Length: 452
Image (cartoon, rainbow, N blue to C red; front, side):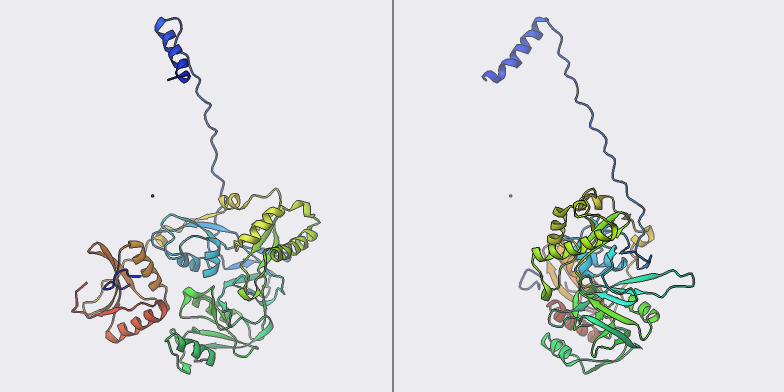
């Protein structure tokens, strides 16, 4: 945030061998001794990486398959955020953050290697219709077999209910589908928005700015729906009043493919185990706050899941590195990792993970259009550190809808400006949103105001 009021916002015995050697050399009694060079260090080959499959949303599904996809890695390009990468790879906020602990979501850093937790273990639930695992923030849509009998599953990242409004568990069904629906805002939602200083009307008309998005799947549970959002950066978080929230581009696919009458099963399974080839994988997520468990309880849950998987292959407990299991249960990395004794540990596993390199045309951002002469702007203050200014710009670009913003050096500091906007009313609406969402007050700048 700005850091000024008007800114807004650490020779004794040891010499004897040398003297002796010198005296011998001076008398010509011996040649200078040849000290053999140490053997060259063996060349260590870089870990072999498989070809990256890239972003994965739809997966073929074999009858006994337990794990979808492949964990991958990629490198950050320029100013892109973890959320930019997450959305490109069909991942949600929590997923990308859990897999990259300690990495700044908004400024991960150009060239940094980040984990893409694309692989997922299917929950213990029916393999038909829709299945949501709220702990993993995933919704699986099991498609009907095609003409050749081939089965596929679509895996979507989802936002789920907050702790005070948890998503219900159990089974219901899709009762209706609606495109561009009006939103009759529940009283609890209106109260919450009013407390934030962001009041909502009783009915929000359908359209792209509607908080529930453009398409809705109604459920047999009254007041709960599957919907999209006008704030896609929140997808994958606990942000709803119990509903399941998808990215805007995902809700349209689900709307087209899911049939009225389809079952929806909602489970809470933060610890999963399954086989992928000859590797036994363990996937551990952070449990929901209201279902928090101790480390020992988590280890017990993991042991049950692992032993069930072992029994299916006729393997024994002795095949498992239980110390590694304990480490993963405590660390909660959020993506599948191998736990058999002969399997690689986490660092070695990631060292051989497929590396995705964005195509050259994808890496280049389109040039910014020239702003009109009569545009309005918001001055959001200046900052002593460039990274603080860059982080604010990234956050503004991920508001819903996104706010155009930029930063520039000014008088030894870094000034952040939002805009351009068509008129003063537009600038005022955006200023209000920024104040509600980020707690920042912006100063409106008219087209003729060129002051910094």
